[in-house]
Image 1 (cartoon, rainbow, N blue to C red):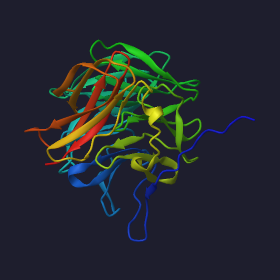
Image 2 (cartoon, rainbow, N blue to C red):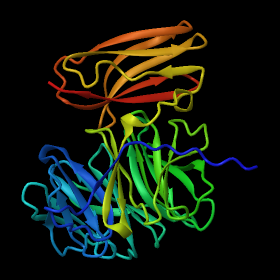
Image 3 (cartoon, rainbow, N blue to C red):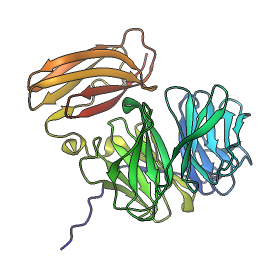
Image 4 (cartoon, helix red, strand yellow):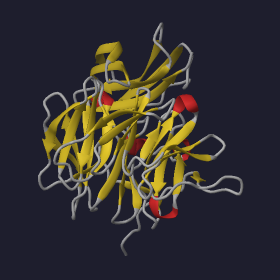
Length: 365
């Protein structure tokens, strides 16, 4: 008898219409969290609006009639939108006023959008099978990658590894790919058994999530893609461009055909430590987290070997190296004093010749 796939049932929260608030979501395709203003912003395929949802669940139109149908992404004080065949537009998060418009010649269907640590946007053209790069300092754009027979859909910047992840929209066995930003090479990092992947994202423990239209579900890969993906969400109404919210450690899933945003509390998902890291090396979550000035990291090695442990900011830059050298087998602890570093999200990164593990941490002063 064929075994059924394991399914997690973490805490789910739905944001849609309530008795006291009108639901303005109409085929939500993509959503992000605007932390300073404690609200979610969602692009809507049917209307082209960007809809804001505040902490009480009330909806309002933040950007109206600007063809913001597909991916949305926050970089600095601007939310950028991939507007299908109307280019890429940027809107001031404080006022909603348009502050940028790049019309890309020859584009067919711009879909998802992300940014790197050097002031560049990347946008996928799923039907044109291309990825474009936009330099934000002067809005100059160029063709970054011609994806050929593997059309790119979802995009996500992976800061610790300085790469752009791609969820492919192929008809069969869609791969997950990565663009190395150091040399622009593209490589397959996972071969799924699904077609028509949509969104891709990454959580604070370094796990990866992707959605697929074939099974209308969301799956999770471990941080090294060493195990088969685990299904964590299923909805026949079409989960679209998934996004991790590091401020609340939650997964945001726009479900298009029922006009809802679904939130999965990642703290309630079973740890499955042996699927997160190989048995030879383990990096536990720091404690305390969030922290004010200092925090402790615990790691385990099955064999002695060379280890490098450093802290990386959201731009992918190393802010401090805590350890570099040889470690004995066993459990080790390192304490980090954040010093004068500003509040924010950082990545703890443990590297050995065999593996690289990351954990997301939050400094609050």
